[in-house]
Length: 272
Length: 265
Ligand SMILES: Nc1ncnc2c1ncn2[C@@H]1O[C@H](COP(=O)(O)OP(=O)(O)OP(=O)(O)O)[C@@H](O)[C@H]1O
Ligand SMILES: [Mg+2]
Image (cartoon, rainbow over all chains, first blue to last red; front, side):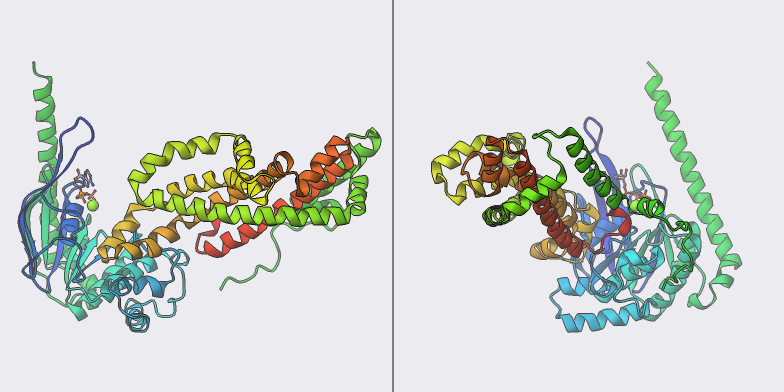
């Protein structure tokens, strides 16, 4: 379980400008074995929230607990999947997937055995000797996923993992991820820009709003599991459509709030 | 596996000219060699002998040139190895420790731009006509560009890769051996390539102006006697040496950076 209580995080602004409040008073509980998706306009602090959970950036106030232990830095029970894949281009697929275990000091034989198992699981069997540069974007992100899963994390942190992929590849990977998740039930925090993706994959959607970055609301997604076997009918269901509609209404309201606030700010600035 | 296309898209018509068009390097070489010979013959001046008499000179002085070449190559290899170890080593340290970089950066840049030969009298004073004077000159010529390139190489490792390392709990040493060094290798090797040419220059200048030995001595002797054929003959030898040195470095580079996409070579 991840418990986030009263977490704020500000980044120093560029010279002369005010600090950016990337997160303000964020409270959130991520349940065990839950697939949580996080949605919100650009700049609302989604990545920052994920990096705080990962222990990659320190938060200013509040507490972040993973299974009751405060987060002070990265830990082996949390693993990341990056939007830009972040694979090591000089190492083959096998070595890339085994990287997390290598960093934990697991011996070569054991970690390669485990890596092979995961390469198989993400559907890349036979590609273990290839370099990342020889793979398509979709295959590269499969490597990224396998690398994260290889350390057997309790929590999988994914920052727009399919954002850089084309529509069809993204769809295949969503299916693959759901299939794997349904088999492993690892806790997942999944950031996305896509309302459809958030609904299709998640148990709950966290909707965030910007300036300062905070949680707007958390919505339960009603569709039953497993979904990976019949994604198409899930997507054409009334529940799915209603859910996406609801999210869109909220996001649209958020966008017009932001616009109104900006106009009010400009009006105030031009008044004598 | 890619299938081999049965016919190339642009079929060269058989014939000498079109074959030359397909090999720009060979063509330019033939033009250069032929031009040299022709201009040399038609000028008929001692200061610009045709290629044939230069090659003739090379053959006549073969024994002497080979001995000089041995001396020069030893200087070059010694100087270059010391230079690579020190230059890349210091560059890595400066890349790792910002304070060290801040402290040394300006001096490294000064040394990079200063004409390296101005230090020759100092080396001469220390080592006299010994080999180490020349090794030191080669060092001054080739080291600093490697330091500068290596620092940049370390500094430009993508922050994403470093964050990936952190996210997977990479210890500091592993971050260096598994991420920073491989990522920095292409730029470091580019620095070593640049340094290779400078080292050859340093070798010749060192031999010509301090300890008069090796190929540098022959060049100096030849120009003293206004023997253009000998000077040009040595020049040909030096060019060959430079090519071989660059080829060796290029070979090492290609092995170390095989993972680079073909388009970025
Ligand atoms: N390292 C940093 N230094 C300074 N400001 C930062 C830093 N990281 C994020 N910010 C700022 O904090 C705010 C939130 O950024 P964050 O990347 O978390 O947003 P996001 O929701 O992930 O946006 P996107 O959807 O575009 O990825 C933004 O205004 C951003 O400019
Ligand atoms: Mg982001």
